[in-house]
Length: 248
Image (cartoon, rainbow, N blue to C red; front, side):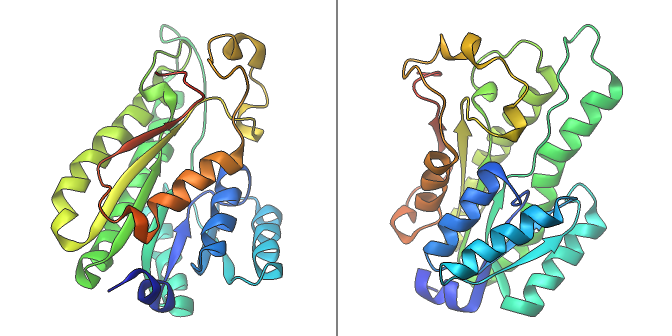
């Protein structure tokens, strides 16, 4: 199955696609011809706004509600997309949360919720998608990791652990499925100005960024767009930092 055929017979799922990086990724993939499932947990207005923007630009998309940390919800999300568009042949695991705190006082809940949403959900979604992709001998999975997986980030033991796990999962899955035409890669954004980072003191972080500025959601989306393209068919198991040189 070629890239154009996959776009015609399948679709892309973007988890956490209602705002920020996820919204930009959904719009970038739609511009490349993917029919998109814009997944959201609670922000229905945001997800429908993303869908409206895609449709206005000539693309196809639907909003799909579901908490991807819940295995039953994952099945519902896939069933909805399969009914509308056929096979899910492209997945971007973008859904994520932060619950920061110093390791000595970090609560069990903060640890488990972040790992469940950022890592467990990405695995469960990928596992569900791979059952389809392997049969089709075509697939693209891109995991949204973080510079925190590659560089110490005080106050984020849970977040860093979840994203480091995502990086390790990426490389392992990549070698397991490479012979079947499925690629698995990760993008590791540094400091990107989004709603998720609105409470962060950017001045302290940007002092350590060689580019001396925050990244944009469009810059992250462009990298994901490439990894989901035909031009990236020989790229798998890669972790692409998008961080202005922070982890160089």
